[in-house]
Length: 222
Ligand code: DX5
Ligand code: ZN
Image (cartoon, rainbow, N blue to C red; front, side, top):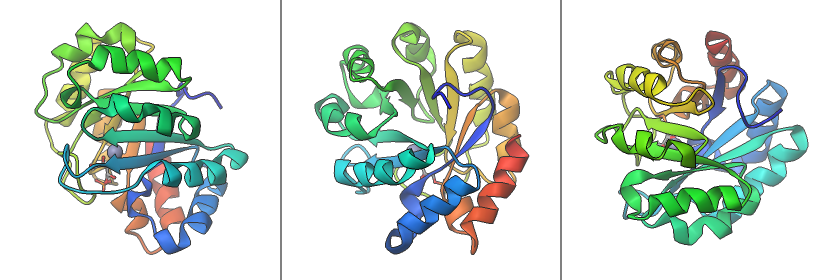
């Protein structure tokens, strides 16, 4: 499978996985058809939460790549450009926030130079103008549907309208990821607006049976 989506896919966000049972959960999700795994990296500055670093991402990659999986790293950190070389070996795609680096044009170029798909992430309050300006510099948009920092937040209902505006303004080859609050009640609105990568943490790992929750979302997405 190529990183460029041919169809709409659901990305399990491992932030809410059972960390003591992570390998088994990832293996089961791969067996159920999951192919892109989303890893949320938070620095306690850009967002008010701390999560994981490159060793964790490498462990995810070691688990899912032999099973045909890929790793999408979402850097919610200030000055992400300084961290790219640490994450690139275990990432297939990396998204960085336009709000987090004054030299985002250069940072996006660096992601591609390191061999990963480059993603531009937009906070819910960020207008789409910079995404249009930078369109030749990245492969996908991460259109945040919650304010980044925590899993389990409600989907911001103006997101589908923003996705539609992005879809209309961006070249066809750029794909759109929607991140936050995706579950059975919200998935179709993001998909119908034009998103291809639908990220979900709580609706999968908050369920008693994450694999069947994933399967259900994947069926809704198809
Ligand atoms: C939020 C993260 C999301 C998060 C989604 O800051 O970027 O990827 O894991 O969690 P849910 O699906 O619970 O909203
Ligand atoms: Zn994320």
